[in-house]
Length: 331
Image (tube, rainbow, N blue to C red; front, side, top):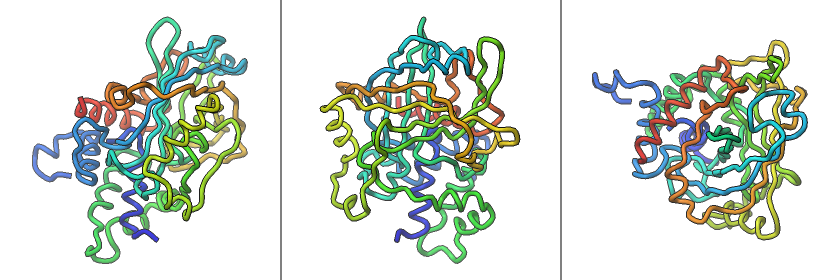
């Protein structure tokens, strides 16, 4: 059993692919997004050239073929008939570039997708291997990370992070979700944290959250088997899968029903909500130089085409700002 501080730091480190406390006057003038990136650097150290969070990753390329149903939901160009190129980055949580895949800080995993749009430009999806997020705003997330950082082995009981979880029951529920190690990055599902607004050519609006699920088995290994695997087992297993043929995921949209919260990522919608298949993502091969490629890549949930808009979830803007800050620093 991992100590609560280690578990929460491990968990919180990976929760916001998009997120990257000081007390002086200059720090007080910083935006929440900048403070979040600072706090990740405080927790994991500053590693120049790497992301503040999900520092360890591997880049692949492939294609996306939209389904016939996709255009009925959105007029976005990549959801029409033609296939588009995609660049996909799989990652481990934490700000540690060399974190072993089986280490507690490596979960949850991440999947970020960049779609090349017909006619130019691109759009992104940023997802993790958890259905929900333990806080509803960037400010709450900063408080959560600071509480984790202040809850060392000598901290008086209840520790700051224990106090935070006691006062945020939804956070406690999501922190407790098991995160077993998958066979590879290609054998587990990923979830969009936030709701987005989809508008079709006729102006009809539908809100939904992304789900990305493997075509085929969702496979995990036991804790005992995970402990015996190499530090980069998930990437190596995916490359081995690709040697036998492409690895595919279904891109789904879980539709909001009347009354479902659109602005609170701590509230997970029921699995009984209908889903629509937007298309199939095909992973074809790793890029030749992943480290060079990923340094130049910026994935952000605010990079949206016509036909897809953010909901009023405050995390979307906070994620976009923190991602841009982390990108700027690693350049």
